[in-house]
Length: 147
Ligand SMILES: [Zn+2]
Image 1: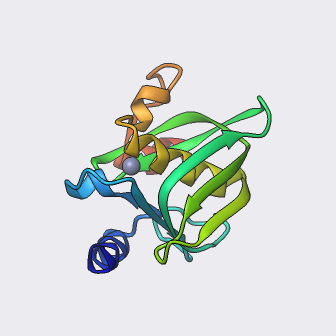
Image 2: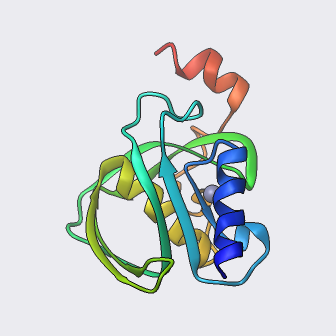
């Protein structure tokens, strides 16, 4: 298990991901890793320390949602705008089996909801209100970043 978690962290970093869920590397386990550290795929986003989430549970703290861009290592070269809860409570175990219980907001909350969805068989496309913003990365850089 520890080796598997180390491999997940390495894979996430190798692909400049901000998170990775076990089923993305073909393991049916309730494990996700997240980290945002000056990420080139998501510039101008606040850093999030490396966190290992085992058996995570996510509870929205309010109905308030926010739409922002997301991409996914499992759906290469695409971006789309996805509504997510702004504020969530996260309960999980860490890699040593210690209980985690914290509140995540904004981009931090978004990353966790994205990975939590993976663990439950959903990708961000399933959360988009419509596909009018679904964009290839190249076109994203050319058209969306200017406006
Ligand atoms: Zn993803």
